[in-house]
Amino acid sequence: MILPTIDVPSLPTKRLPEAERQDVLFLSRKFNDMVKYTKNFYADVGLFEECLFAARKATRENRDLLSRYPFVAARDGAMTIYHFAKALDNANGAAFRVPTIARLVDKNLLKDARKLLEDTFPLHVALRHAVAHAAELASNPEKEKDRALSGPYEGLGIKIEHEQATATIEEGLSNRTFFTTHQGQILSYDITKSSADALVEATRTFMSAFSRVSAHLRE
Image (cartoon, rainbow, N blue to C red; front, side, top):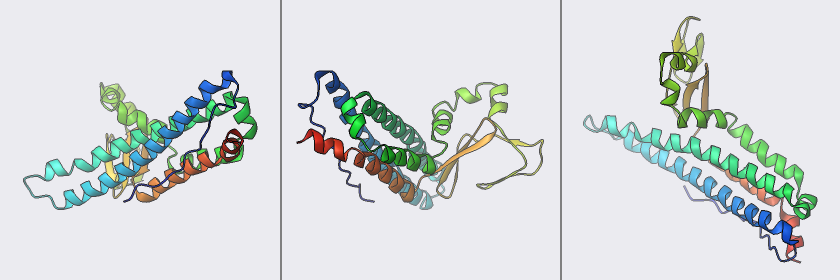
């Protein structure tokens, strides 16, 4: 995999009122954060693929170790998606605190970027919580019960036939889908190049919303 190129809008502050400049500088930093997390997720996907390859070559002596490697990349991916979403939200909030930007920014493109994120990773907030707090969510029998998935259910290599039966899965992989159980449901995301490409598209769409802003500030 090759890291994507993402153009970041230039937002010079010299033409802005003093009261708007700090938020614009903050916005520029959030642009850079979005690019950073997008590339980090690309790295997560690349690492995941390398780990899968290594796991397939495992011997009896190192199989237990190498089989854990893909989960490291998948867990980090779940955290990275959440951090990307927060950076996007922070950038969006900053844009609308600046009257000059709020007047010129393409609001439809901002919505399109958010929709791309939500369509690709609809469960990213809950998934991040489940991954980040895995031990806390299983700290006593009641919490374990709350986390469990109830039957009947079939999918992702899981089959629960009876309503009374349950399954608690801290982390699992089905091909390139990472999943966990949380509050009685399956949370999952695909750690694939197509998912990484969708994140790139969301970032580029978000950045393109500021083309008129950038042109205005550079006049």
